Length: 127
Image (tube, rainbow, N blue to C red; front, side, top):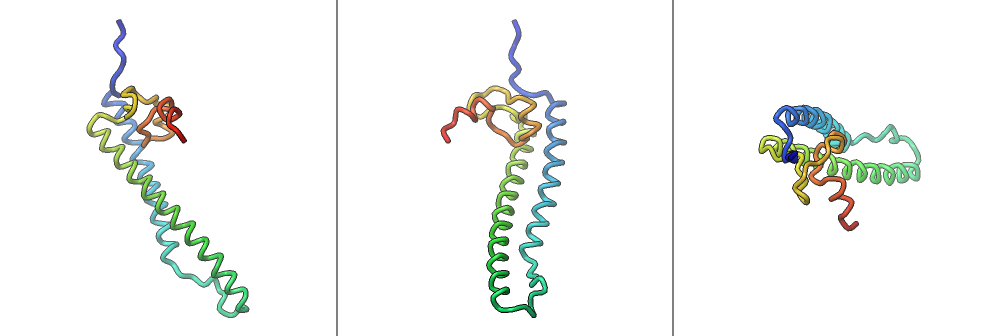
C-alpha cells in the first residue's frame, strides 16, 4: 500500500526556497532598473533639433514610459507572488495545488516557482 505524498520534504522545500530567493533578488534588481529609468528624464540630446522631431520623440518616449510602467507593475506583482511562495514554504504548504490539493510537479515549480495550481488545474480553468 503506497501512501501518496501530501507535501514536499523539508529538504525539498529548502531547495525551492533557494531558487525563489535567487529569483526574488533578480526581480528586485530588474524592478529597481525599471523604476530608475522611469524617474530619469533624459531629453536624449534633442534640445537643438526641429520641433516636429521633438514632438515625435515625445510621443515615442510617452509610449516607452507607459510600457516601462506596465513592466514595473508586472514585476511588482511577480515579487509579491514570490514572497507569497516563501510564506507557503514556511507554512509547509508550498507546492500543493490550491484546486486539487495534490502536489504540483517539481518540474513545474522549478519553471514557475510561484505556481499555486498544477498544470491539470490550470488547463481546466476557463480562459
